[in-house]
Amino acid sequence: MKKIIATIVLAASLVAGAFAAGTITSDDFNLGEIAPGKTVAAKGFVLNGAQKGATIEDKSKEPVKIGDKSFAKRIKMKGADAYIEFDVKAGDIISVVATSSSKESPRAIRILNDGKKLGDITAPAWNMKNISVTQGSVTALKDGKCQVKGFGGGVYIFEVDIKSGN
Image 1: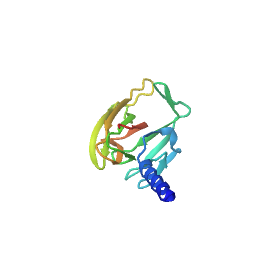
Image 2: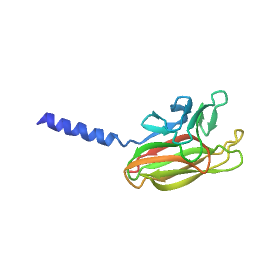
Image 3: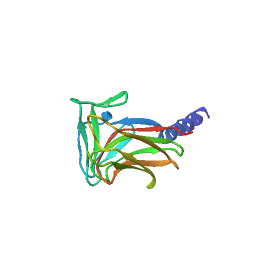
Image 4: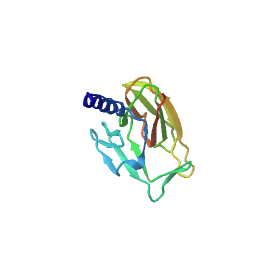
Protein backbone atom coordinates (compact mmCIF):
# COMPACT_ATOMS: atom_id res chain seq x y z
CA MET A 1 0.00 0.00 0.00
CA LYS A 2 2.85 2.42 0.83
CA LYS A 3 4.38 1.78 -2.62
CA ILE A 4 1.08 2.57 -4.32
CA ILE A 5 0.71 5.84 -2.38
CA ALA A 6 4.33 6.77 -3.12
CA THR A 7 3.75 6.08 -6.83
CA ILE A 8 0.60 8.23 -6.85
CA VAL A 9 2.39 11.10 -5.08
CA LEU A 10 5.31 10.87 -7.52
CA ALA A 11 2.98 10.85 -10.54
CA ALA A 12 1.04 13.84 -9.20
CA SER A 13 4.25 15.80 -8.61
CA LEU A 14 5.43 15.05 -12.15
CA VAL A 15 2.15 16.28 -13.61
CA ALA A 16 2.27 19.39 -11.43
CA GLY A 17 5.89 19.94 -12.50
CA ALA A 18 4.84 20.15 -16.15
CA PHE A 19 3.55 23.62 -15.31
CA ALA A 20 6.28 25.63 -13.72
CA ALA A 21 6.80 29.29 -13.09
CA GLY A 22 10.21 30.42 -14.20
CA THR A 23 12.31 32.83 -16.18
CA ILE A 24 14.19 32.47 -19.43
CA THR A 25 16.64 35.08 -20.67
CA SER A 26 18.39 35.44 -23.99
CA ASP A 27 21.63 34.41 -22.22
CA ASP A 28 20.15 30.96 -21.49
CA PHE A 29 20.27 29.96 -25.18
CA ASN A 30 23.35 29.01 -27.21
CA LEU A 31 24.55 31.51 -29.82
CA GLY A 32 23.60 30.92 -33.44
CA GLU A 33 20.88 30.61 -36.02
CA ILE A 34 17.69 28.68 -35.45
CA ALA A 35 16.77 27.55 -38.93
CA PRO A 36 13.17 27.70 -40.13
CA GLY A 37 11.27 24.71 -38.76
CA LYS A 38 13.88 23.99 -36.05
CA THR A 39 13.64 24.38 -32.28
CA VAL A 40 16.02 24.78 -29.35
CA ALA A 41 15.13 24.37 -25.69
CA ALA A 42 16.40 25.83 -22.43
CA LYS A 43 14.99 25.67 -18.90
CA GLY A 44 11.60 24.30 -20.02
CA PHE A 45 11.11 26.97 -22.72
CA VAL A 46 11.28 26.18 -26.46
CA LEU A 47 12.39 28.67 -29.10
CA ASN A 48 10.80 27.73 -32.44
CA GLY A 49 12.25 29.18 -35.66
CA ALA A 50 8.92 28.57 -37.48
CA GLN A 51 9.01 29.73 -41.13
CA LYS A 52 11.58 32.56 -41.06
CA GLY A 53 13.93 31.40 -38.31
CA ALA A 54 15.45 33.24 -35.37
CA THR A 55 18.94 34.17 -34.17
CA ILE A 56 20.65 34.26 -30.80
CA GLU A 57 22.97 37.23 -31.31
CA ASP A 58 26.25 37.83 -29.47
CA LYS A 59 26.28 41.16 -27.62
CA SER A 60 29.11 40.25 -25.23
CA LYS A 61 31.43 43.02 -26.50
CA GLU A 62 28.71 45.60 -25.78
CA PRO A 63 26.29 43.92 -23.34
CA VAL A 64 22.76 45.27 -23.37
CA LYS A 65 22.00 46.87 -20.00
CA ILE A 66 18.37 47.00 -18.98
CA GLY A 67 17.81 48.30 -15.48
CA ASP A 68 20.05 46.35 -13.12
CA LYS A 69 20.45 43.46 -15.60
CA SER A 70 23.02 42.96 -18.34
CA PHE A 71 22.50 40.66 -21.32
CA ALA A 72 25.39 39.22 -23.38
CA LYS A 73 22.93 37.85 -25.96
CA ARG A 74 19.63 38.80 -27.51
CA ILE A 75 16.99 36.73 -29.30
CA LYS A 76 16.13 38.17 -32.70
CA MET A 77 12.71 37.02 -33.86
CA LYS A 78 12.49 37.39 -37.62
CA GLY A 79 9.00 38.58 -38.41
CA ALA A 80 5.76 37.36 -36.94
CA ASP A 81 6.17 33.61 -36.92
CA ALA A 82 9.08 32.62 -34.64
CA TYR A 83 8.05 32.15 -31.01
CA ILE A 84 9.01 31.07 -27.51
CA GLU A 85 6.66 28.41 -26.11
CA PHE A 86 6.15 27.23 -22.52
CA ASP A 87 3.57 25.68 -20.21
CA VAL A 88 1.34 27.77 -17.94
CA LYS A 89 -1.48 27.35 -15.47
CA ALA A 90 -4.56 29.55 -15.50
CA GLY A 91 -3.76 32.71 -13.57
CA ASP A 92 0.00 32.67 -14.28
CA ILE A 93 1.38 36.11 -15.10
CA ILE A 94 3.58 36.32 -18.21
CA SER A 95 5.99 39.27 -18.47
CA VAL A 96 8.19 40.06 -21.47
CA VAL A 97 11.22 42.35 -21.76
CA ALA A 98 11.73 43.26 -25.42
CA THR A 99 12.40 45.96 -28.03
CA SER A 100 11.64 46.31 -31.70
CA SER A 101 14.51 45.32 -34.02
CA SER A 102 13.67 48.47 -36.03
CA LYS A 103 15.47 51.70 -35.14
CA GLU A 104 12.44 53.70 -36.28
CA SER A 105 9.27 51.74 -35.53
CA PRO A 106 7.84 50.15 -32.41
CA ARG A 107 6.45 46.66 -32.90
CA ALA A 108 4.09 44.39 -31.04
CA ILE A 109 4.86 41.32 -28.97
CA ARG A 110 1.85 38.99 -29.14
CA ILE A 111 1.14 36.49 -26.35
CA LEU A 112 -1.10 33.51 -27.08
CA ASN A 113 -2.63 30.95 -24.69
CA ASP A 114 -3.56 27.71 -26.47
CA GLY A 115 -3.73 29.61 -29.77
CA LYS A 116 -5.94 32.43 -28.48
CA LYS A 117 -4.62 35.98 -28.16
CA LEU A 118 -4.09 37.11 -24.57
CA GLY A 119 -2.73 40.49 -25.56
CA ASP A 120 -0.16 42.57 -27.38
CA ILE A 121 2.64 44.47 -25.69
CA THR A 122 4.32 47.34 -27.57
CA ALA A 123 8.08 47.01 -27.94
CA PRO A 124 9.71 50.43 -28.56
CA ALA A 125 12.16 51.07 -31.40
CA TRP A 126 15.74 49.87 -30.81
CA ASN A 127 18.24 52.47 -29.58
CA MET A 128 21.50 51.06 -28.18
CA LYS A 129 22.55 54.37 -26.57
CA ASN A 130 19.25 54.91 -24.78
CA ILE A 131 17.56 51.52 -24.48
CA SER A 132 13.86 51.64 -23.82
CA VAL A 133 12.05 48.35 -23.35
CA THR A 134 8.48 47.53 -22.66
CA GLN A 135 8.08 45.16 -19.82
CA GLY A 136 4.43 44.35 -20.06
CA SER A 137 2.48 41.43 -18.71
CA VAL A 138 -0.66 39.40 -19.36
CA THR A 139 -2.46 36.71 -17.37
CA ALA A 140 -2.98 33.16 -18.70
CA LEU A 141 -6.65 32.27 -18.94
CA LYS A 142 -6.27 28.48 -18.86
CA ASP A 143 -3.78 25.67 -18.34
CA GLY A 144 -1.82 24.84 -21.46
CA LYS A 145 0.77 26.22 -23.85
CA CYS A 146 1.66 29.87 -24.21
CA GLN A 147 3.59 31.50 -27.03
CA VAL A 148 5.43 34.82 -27.11
CA LYS A 149 6.09 36.08 -30.63
CA GLY A 150 6.88 39.19 -32.59
CA PHE A 151 3.91 40.57 -34.48
CA GLY A 152 4.25 42.81 -37.50
CA GLY A 153 8.02 42.62 -37.75
CA GLY A 154 11.21 41.60 -36.00
CA VAL A 155 11.77 42.04 -32.29
CA TYR A 156 14.55 41.46 -29.77
CA ILE A 157 13.51 39.39 -26.75
CA PHE A 158 15.64 39.61 -23.63
CA GLU A 159 13.50 37.92 -20.99
CA VAL A 160 10.25 36.02 -20.50
CA ASP A 161 9.13 35.60 -16.89
CA ILE A 162 6.29 33.42 -15.62
CA LYS A 163 5.00 34.01 -12.09
CA SER A 164 2.40 31.86 -10.43
CA GLY A 165 -0.87 33.73 -10.20
CA ASN A 166 -2.33 31.35 -7.64
